[in-house]
Amino acid sequence: MTVLSPARSSLRMVSVLDALLAILDRVRVLIIRLWPAWLFSAYFFGGWWFASKGDGIQDAYSRIASAWQIAAGFEPHLTEIGFVWGPIPVVPEIPFAIIGRYWAPMITMGLCATIVTAGFGILMVYQAKMLFTERGLRPATVTALCWLMAFNPMLFIYSSNGMSEIPYIALLMAGIRYLSRWETSRATLDLAAASMLVGLATWDRYEALVAMVGLVSVVILVLLHDTRGQSWRERRGLFEANLIIAVMPTLMFFGTFILFSWTLTGQPLAQFTSQQGNNVQILALLRSQHYSATATTRAINISSELLHIAPVLPFLFFFVLGLIWTERSKLRISGLAIFGLPLIFDLYGLTSGIQFDFMRYYIQAIMLVFCLGVELTVARRWGATVAVAAAAITALTVWTSMGNPNIGSLEYSYYVTLTGGEGHYYSDAQLDTPHVMAQWFDRLSLPPDSVLTDPTFGGLMITQSRRPYQFATSNDRNFLDVVNAPYKHHVRYVITVPSSLGTIYPISAYFPTMFNGCVPNTQLAAQFVLHGLQGFRRTYRVYKITGPISPSGVKADEKCLYPTPPNTH
Image 1 (cartoon, rainbow, N blue to C red):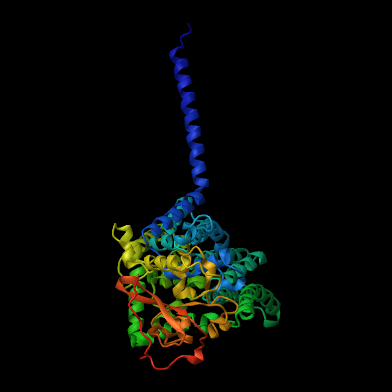
Image 2: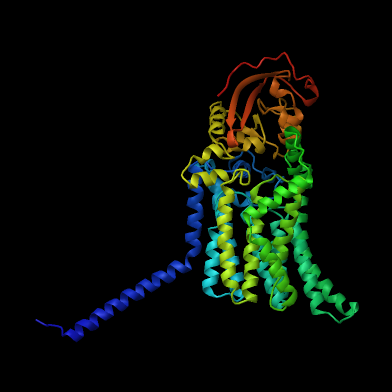
């Protein structure tokens, strides 16, 4: 029998401990390198959990409905994308929506949209991480800022709920990173990449055009600085070459979007001219609510909301602006321009009443805090501490703002759910009634394009249906022909809402008195009541078409003799 000496026993124990430590170190490295997978999982399961609790936003489900009709519709085509909003995030949702044929939660819970925004959330954090690293921040500061960005309450929620905010922010963040690199190196490829990324963002939100103005402004200022002392003849070639590179990709992307929209729907800028466009919806809403607040009152309210959400932003802005003036060689203005100008544009829209007063329009203020914090860190030793503290304070103030329904009307349900309450009572996307409506139609086993509706208010119902092809919507190529002669085009049911909603719902624009039973050859088939956001109620009436109808045959008098028997679900 061999007995190890104390020295040999200690040596073997040390070897075993070394091996264990090596394994643990490899696990640690693996965990760090796989951070995108862990963060994606957090966003995805967060979205799943929110959906299971009934939290959601109606606009996200409208986009899911478009993707669902493309994936499972009777005759899929590009116009199903809609073109009232940009094709991002609808297009990336389509492959995942196909899975909805076999696994319903992908559509009914909006998980196809969650996957897309979670992916863009990863892109946002990754591009921020690379920007912070390339600007020379220490690894500890980079890690702290990235975690505070990834789990900022508002950024986390919008990375999981299928809305357009995070794709927009992620593309602009990537554009800022490459523009910042161009400010340092003057490499043409970096400028081209920045312009392409900002241009791609126009496929998500129109405000990206203002970001392009910011990008061009940065290019002009940098070139003016580089060529000071030279004559215009000497400057001209350099300016022309760089401005073409800066502008053309964005014009190409936006121009392509306009061309597709014009060719397929007949409207080049449907967001401003369509019945479902933002301008039409806001005007109708203001008329229905007799909104009469003055511009001064709105400006005071908007300023107060901005200070509630990002109270440190004004201090960072003016301090960094002063540093840029005195230490231009150290600092970069790409973040200030690309996030700052669109934020100013949104604040103007909120103040002038051309945009809905939603907290999500302040999301760029959150990103500005990070961008300004980075420049402060580059300029001053103590800047890292201030930047991390500012990001942490912003996370806290965003959380408290979400808890105020007067500020975070759409986000309040998430806040209530996260604090252990019944958030679905306050959710913008109430799915109970749309689910009942979808089942009612599914049981009829209707042929394709039998039910006339629209993704604006019908989107929730379409996502709950296993037969999305039965719905004819305003995204269809022949919608104008269908709505002018529904019976001729084999439409047998029309979903109506109160005429007070006006042109928000295109069916009401063509048949404004149908809800009240004033259209001949129609018969009330069912009535459903949706309990919406914060006690809001909306009634849907389904009319069966028994013969030819047309907008020209609608009675002007809403007090009609056609009865509406009680039949509420």
